[in-house]
Image (cartoon, rainbow, N blue to C red; front, top):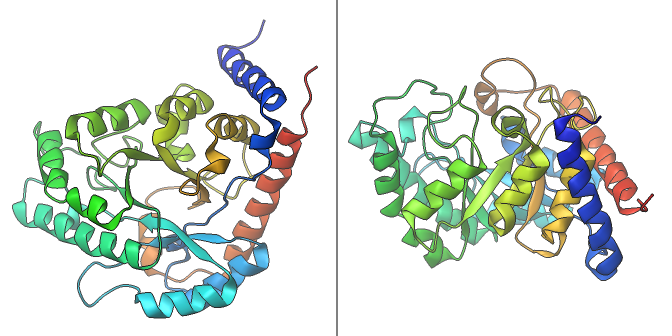
Length: 318
């Protein structure tokens, strides 16, 4: 007798094989592989782009580093470097801490989050990004302020939601495990948040398989449940390291994404974000890491993912 998760996995596998048989033309395009660069920390942007070029990666998720009017990437410089490496922006990884928390009980921090979103959304449009990741509550804060966090988060984001429509980008709500934040931990929570906010500018989801490992009963099912709302999927193996270094069932994830026609949507990306095992990974955004370690993370991840993708696409019914 199979284990419970195996029945769910097999259901997705059979659906994929049927889809492949009936829609061979829809499998011609490959999934758009991106990389989230905030984990590269203080490394020069040109160095990061050159690494990605060597690895055959064509898209980047940029660190949302416009924490103030005088901080962050400058569009002209970013375009020049990316154009030289043949790289395009997939989206922006919005960074939400206690200092810019949509759900905060301190109005000054809510205002900081609103102002941050305005700056980052404008930048996203300037560099051709398709989405901006939004966290409903601070990441890195696991103790709630009170029972009104959700109300404040919805109110805060509603005040700036028109900005996403204005700039024609997708606001992507990211579910994050309860060990790291207080609101929106799974796909169901994200859908409920989006429905309650009820704004055309906030309609999408940024998934993260590392958080899904502890907050979902089955990652493949959760991806299918997100459906067309899913616009980006952060990837890391079960140990939060490079793809292929743990026991993640990447094949089922790939099948689920193809079933969503994810490979044929110009605004949908698969974006590794291997932050390493252990505690708080967020200080690394302001630190330096050995380039050799980053090279290994990138090259091993893209190689393994593409190998598994080709294996999945070559599967035949038994």
